[in-house]
Image (cartoon, rainbow, N blue to C red; front, side, top):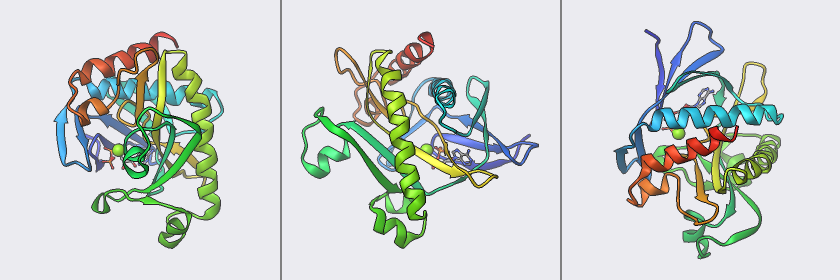
Length: 235
Ligand code: ADP
Ligand code: MG
């Protein structure tokens, strides 16, 4: 049995025989509001693992390096081991969630240009929003790395917006994590899934992401299955 390296809220990381490779197991557990709300979304593990595998593979084809190696089971993928930078990089195309709460902007407003935000990945602090000066103070990334993360996040957005549009989905916003691999390169890591993206149906604005769980809208599992169907069928 492989050794557990880390168990998070949505995934378990296992070591493999190769120290440069990790096995990621996607769980059905869902959490929200810094784990104050907990639940299960039926078959979420396999839906997210398959969605993330497709998207990360697509991004590689588009020239965006990331940790994905291959999907080895419905709920499991092999990835390059990286040292995760403790920053969550958020890109927003349409106003939703904390942006609306913080700035009093109406939900659903199309932003004139994408907004990039950084959050310090620290559960005890509730992942606070940080600016470049805060990041320098915390010494979690160099100014050059921060600029690289910003550029990479916008590049991902440029690829994913048309990817989702062709599947009749609006990419409202999403969260990325990056890490440093064994060669010292900063690469995209973690997952891209309905847990980490806001996705609305193109025609109806029906919510097809974790907001269904956050807001007790019901039908979470069916929404994730719908995203999987659209992502995979058009590939
Ligand atoms: P969390 O509860 O911290 O969100 P998750 O359940 O999402 O954790 O588990 C994934 C954990 O593994 C996260 O902490 C994430 O930063 C980390 N991670 C993702 N990809 C890699 C990788 N390639 N190498 C090392 N750690 C990774
Ligand atoms: Mg996570």
